Image (tube, rainbow, N blue to C red; front, side, top):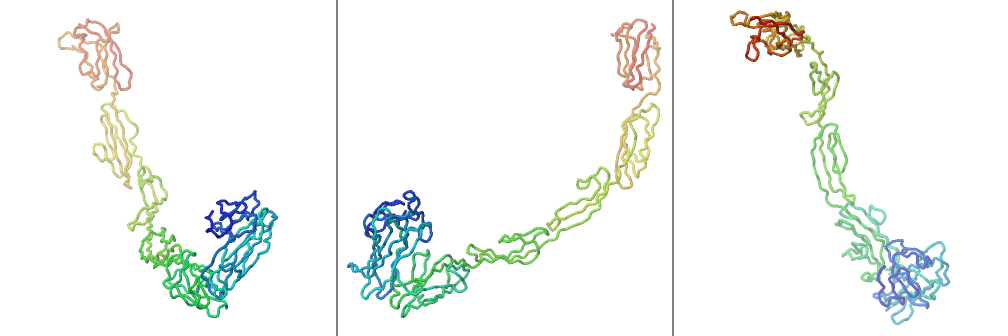
Length: 530
């Protein structure tokens, strides 16, 4: 909704309502659903959803829809008094609108009149139509009153919409255009624009005035621009509007005596573009993104332009692009079994991408060969009879290194222990093997069956010399009743026939010997003789 018209312009009552009642009006940009859809849904006559118009529900008696005093008219000038009118009723009304246009002096003398006749109902939908008349001012008349009078009664019908009520000078058809452009819009990237005009025959002598506007509504005269053609220089940046006003010679100074051309909209986005020079280096296979968003990948010089919202060059970039090649190579690699090259442990062909000295990728094709696995064989762990010798031979190789530092192909072992050898073949590959040699007494120890612990220095202990070869042997002596009288791990100190610090009586006792060499337990009687 828009505010009411100034006081005295109409006899109707203003309401802030999109559906006024009898004798009322409102200023709206859209009407819909009034009186159970008895009125049409519509916008203004241009179809602009934001354009306002006067919506009238006529009074029950004839009245003035619109009255206005016009000052500053030029003598002998033709004017047009007109309005766009719509019969808003959507159903066939009883009363049809009928409007009289009059032009009067301020004293009430009618100078010219025009009646629309009944404005018909149109069942096909809302139809806007322009009504009006031409009028030439008499000598001495510079002020008139224009009036739109409703001739019909209100009630069922006589409901109208009025749009673009105007009293304007009527003159020659005046058309302007911009050199090099078509239509009424100039999208320019320039510092100047040339306007030319085409003016119909009407005046005895034609005067010209070019005008400029920042919004297309408020216009100002351009000083000195009083010729049929006009060059804008310099051309300002942004959007501006231009038109040409013409009038009879001597009347161009009065806005009410002029007629105006079409409006030219000039969108100018020109500003001196920013110039940039860039040198850039990339690796082959990569791309460089120009400021405009275009990607390039080949060496060369590129000219790239970024445009502003007016499609004018804003930034112009010259790119000198260098492309570094990718390095590639083939490596034939041989490794020993059990080793790895860059993490690879199986023969085959592999590709590795590394960073080369120039900062770009380096592609290496690796052909990997693996020597056969060595088999230095010392065999399984072994038993060595005390006094014997074992010859260790791991096989035929180029070099040998034994645990004691010796380097012969064979190694003689005469005592128990852990032995290892590290071998090297003709390819320089290294492997090792280990064997454990465990000594054993291959003869059964000779165990005496009696001794005489009487202190005479002869055969006073149960001496078993062969047990010295079995340091882990466990020796136990029991009475006939199963009481353990002696226990020893190793037999470095022979049994003296005592138990608990006292001599045992002569008699038969029993031994149990575990050599801890995997052989069977030894047992039997031993006699103490006193």
